[in-house]
Image 1 (cartoon, rainbow, N blue to C red):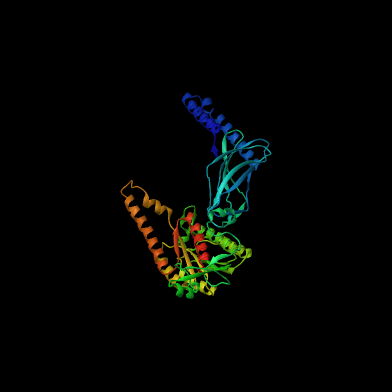
Image 2: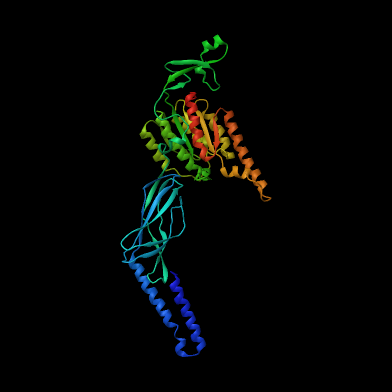
Length: 432
């Protein structure tokens, strides 16, 4: 209970009357302060009973499913059982993994109707989330006090990975659906001969034309491709680190869900693996909408594990999962010194049978720290530390590329475009 203006007035009046009575020296006046005190106590008792009879409550009107990292709208509906208006002070609450505006709201709930508060929420973690009870103060009818109550919302919702179809404009890769490409490699029909380009596979070279012209000549074919793809997602300790709006695992999951949906639209077979120190969950490559739904269900249950990641163990499992040449998209932490050595070993294990694409996230905070002007004596040291971190990232990427494994590190908001562009290039140049 917290006194309001009227309650403070009676409390101050009681004190003043008591002081005046003590100064007067008269016995009757010395007991006069009991009158305002009695009125205050009676008023508080009446308000307490009225607030109890009000049976004020809240219900949340919102979707039963949210999308990771995407803002959603909720409506908090407050009702009561009295025949008069009721004032409320509402402190909105949310699950730990959901961001909301926690500003306290004032609300007047009319008799027999619901009063609504529009609330924006952004889920930051996957899974099922139960909405917690929220702290509410109910104003008494006499304006004497606010009465604290906890309202249970009885609302839960499930957070799922991102969808591809809702933001197709963000993708700079090949369009959806089956279509013919100008490919390099063995095929049913030769389209044309052209100059050799670095990265062309050996079986795309036309040796007779090469001998005639004295330089390497490659063939182009017309043929639909049907690739096998495995998306390996790092769910180890560092995946819980924040990177922009989401943690790293959140970015990996959203990218994997959208990439799987896009690749299946190209009639490719897509599988998924979650790993930390050991493989955690595996889904063999499949084709069609059923495969996409299974992948999304598996990704929706992913959570970071308190264990150091070991990409080498993931690579060993991948070799048993796919028997012929496949594209392995590994979303992992490239800046960890311990993981970097294991990544190189994993790349050697997968090459040359498979084509591993290793993608990681750089730190926007480190880039901002490196480029920020110095305002104190510590700032140059912070900038040097950030520069060393970013340089280590570049060295790790160059080392992976030197092994023959395509690797990239980008800011979180650019990672999807970089991976989709690399996938489009692999298809167009028939690297897989």
